[in-house]
Length: 89
Image 1 (spheres, helix red, strand yellow):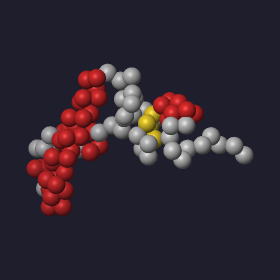
Image 2 (spheres, one colour):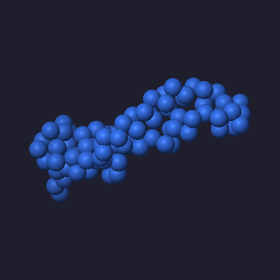
Image 3 (cartoon, helix red, strand yellow):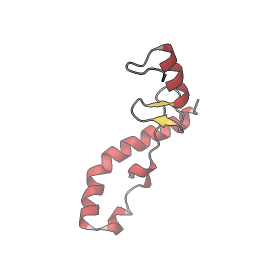
Image 4 (cartoon, helix red, strand yellow):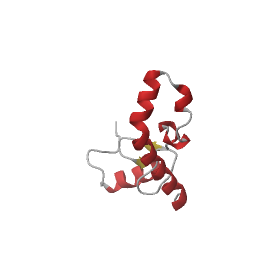
């Protein structure tokens, strides 16, 4: 499981991205890159990390489910993910 501080840092970044999204779009459209560079670095969407909602794991995530591969497999085998079946052919 990811450390609580790393998960909290990512949540803080999400809030900053939402806060400055309109301003960033405005500056990009105007081509004002000098003013764009004055905004906080964490307000850029590329600084966000997709994390598992259960464990906070930062790698091997399925966006559709919001889960890492380990939790996805565990929940799928337990039958807790609707519409997911083990492949058989």
